[in-house]
Image 1 (cartoon, rainbow, N blue to C red):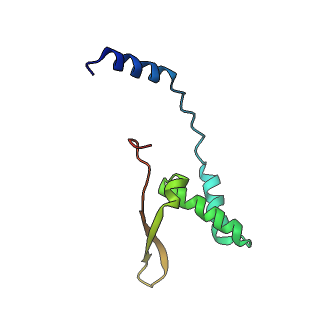
Image 2 (image 1 turned 120 degrees about the horizontal axis):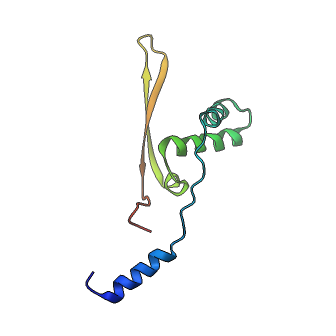
Length: 102
């Protein structure tokens, strides 16, 4: 920047920026409990909340980004005997927040 005023203003804004406080990541045990809850809890609402938390965690999604998902494609992976052994989920979002947008 050529302008001394702009540089000074930008510097002051940077100095006033609050420190980013991140929460601790989920442990493997916590995530395993969420996954088991999503498939085995008798209460539907609890299964939905746990499944949504797993979706956000495994997809590395913020809540707002997960709410913008408008298409899910699921691909099963099966062993030679036809048993389900895994799979992939591909999600398309209508709009997401990036590092450069607000």
